[in-house]
Length: 104
Image (cartoon, rainbow, N blue to C red; front, side, top):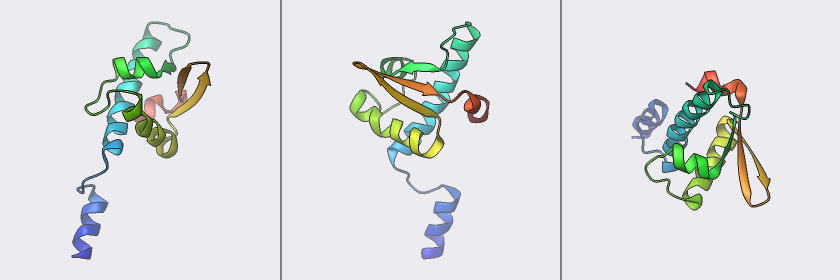
C-alpha cells in the first residue's frame, strides 16, 4: 500500500491542494499576459497589480484577494516567479523576467 501511494505521489496522480494547481494555471496565464504587454512595447510589462491578475488571469476557484493570497504565496515560495511590493493601498507583483521563457 505504501509503495503504491508513493508511486502515485511521484507521478503526480494524487490529489494536490488546490493552490498548487491554481498556481500552475495562474503562472501560465500571467506569463502569457506579460508577453502580450511586452509585445505592445509597454515599458512596465513585468509589473502587474493584484486587480489586473484577478481580471486577466482568471482561474477557477480564485475570485478575490482572499483566495488569491495562497496562490501568490505558492508562486513566491516554490517557483520564485513573483516578487511583491506594497505601494500604498495597491500591491504590485513583479514577474521575474528571466523566468518568462522557462515557464512557457
